[in-house]
Amino acid sequence: MDDEFGPVVASYTWDEAFEDGAFIKIPPAAAMAAGIEMPLAITPGARKEFVEGGDGDEGDRLRTVLSAVARAVKRRPDDEVCFVVPADELPSGKKSTGADELLAITQPADSGGLIMTLMLLDEM
Image (cartoon, rainbow, N blue to C red):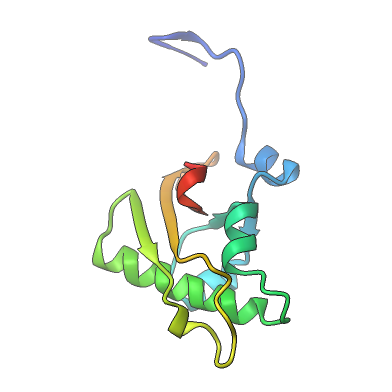
């Protein structure tokens, strides 16, 4: 693939990023349940801060995060959206992991279409 900058000397596909663990796929059913109709990925750092809790409620935390993403994107449908996951929306009786701001970036996927990636602000 050549363009105005010359030949491509290296590339890194989404599939390679998933295989390497740089990104983690979010199950399509979870995204669809939140009203998000594109593939979703999350960085390990964002997953640790927002989804893992050590209390066995990762599914509930993921639903909370995806609901917050869907609301933020609906309010501001840009390629990059920074939003807060409110601690009071975490499952009843569960404590916040301490994180509150997350960045959602929509970009082209390898096979066409779009993919949304959720990451911490310092992972940009």
